[in-house]
Length: 170
Image (cartoon, rainbow, N blue to C red; front, side, top):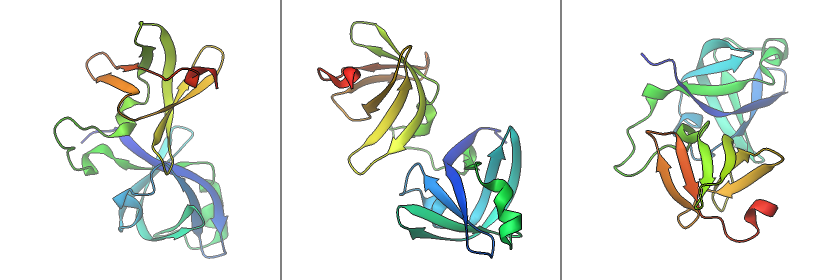
């Protein structure tokens, strides 16, 4: 069994007094946020496994309930944590496709070979996924779309991008 986790989002608050938690999801379309199953909460390097009892959409966030977390006092310690699932719980992507989380930690270069930075996280937006790239002096938001993402090389952990003029200056 793999130890690799797929982050689903950040737990940002409790909700009510019955142990519900609020999640800022990285991807609203994730099937793991709508179906009961096993999830992992990671905080400070420690991992805890829970059964997801219930979840629902609430104002651009997901409210969810974990089995055994039945009060605000039991839920509060998990605020500030990351909610995740094990990698092997995912279905294999279609040929030529990949899960975006896999590029976290990849180095990003432009077409001339100039290093831009490292992908630190991914933001899900209505238009496209955005790769958050930590550069030397600033953070860059690079849309994960054809025409900008030219190549993703899983053997070298490298992404080559062709940013439109001005994108890296924002």
